[in-house]
Image 1 (spheres, rainbow, N blue to C red):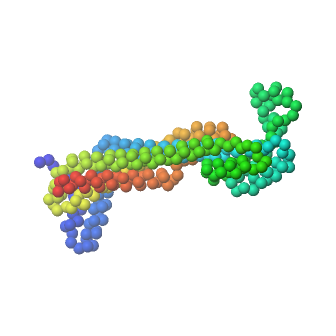
Image 2 (image 1 turned 90 degrees about the horizontal axis):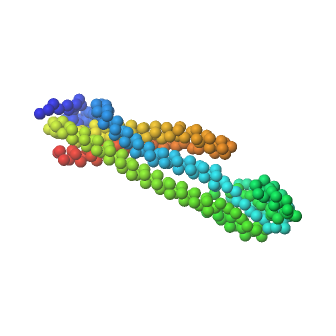
Image 3 (image 1 turned 120 degrees about the vertical axis):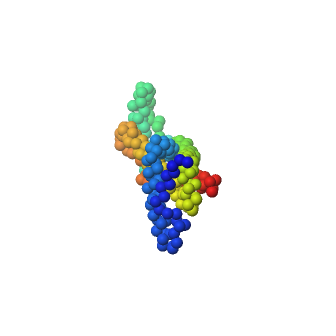
Amino acid sequence: MSTVDVELDPPPVEAVGTGNERFAVWREHHAWSLGASLRRLGSRPIGSLLTITVMGLALALPLAFALLLLNVERLGDALGRSQTVDVYVKLGQDQASVTALAGQLRQRGDVAGVVIKTPQQGLDELSRQQGFSDALHELSDNPLPYVIQLTPSQALSAQAVAALVDQVRVLPAVDTVQDGGTWRQRLDALLGLGGQVVLGWSLMLALAALLVVGNTVRVDISGRIEEIGVLLLLGASPRFIRRPYLYAGIWYGLLGGGLAVALAVGVEYWLAAPAAALSAAYGGSLQLDALPLWVLVAVPVGAAVLGWIGARLVSGWQLRRLA
């Protein structure tokens, strides 16, 4: 028989009599299992590194996609949801009537800003566009109407903006309304789909991380069958034997989650320069977001829980086969 390294510093819990002694040994064995599991990871660095790397990559993918989705939403807020609604006033309305209509619209709670564009301003904009200047000089009078540009409130959804457009369109002095509501609805639908994709990826890759830890623990237990047999003969309970493997699962998850966070932060830094250039193109008004701190903390904790679950399921199944 080959030499068996049982590493049995603390005695089995069942060997102790009183409640206080049982608790002391239980606490001592938890502390020993914590250190022993870490030593086992260090004793086979390549295998441990591969397991941690696979877990880290699996968990980093949904983090990277969530970062992308977060900034697409932020970009949509800057470009799409703040887009103005152009209200074209009927021809023949004078300055006083248009000002009164603008004041009426400004009173609405779903309108963040109102700007009046006169026919002359509209004509000047057209004259600056290539191909229009010569044609406009031939006009005897200005055919353009007053335009009131509305900026919807930032908190409004696409449906609320559509309702605002419908209510403005029926006002007596309004001729027509142009709105990018369709673009907003498409953006919201895209973000909703992206959120579902992130959730689905997260669940699938979390399951993959759980299976990776479970398989690693299974291989470890298979290589220690003789040691486990000796512990069972000495009266150790399955909980006693399983405990170091549970802590190993926690270590795998914690280190894999930490690697995933490091990769996600690295992606953020990698995108910092292009994001700054994009923000400068919009006059510094566009600021891209980083992942929230609570997400960066929750990922290693959640990964540790996944590692514990994977180790718990596989070690329990393996020990029931050996018992």
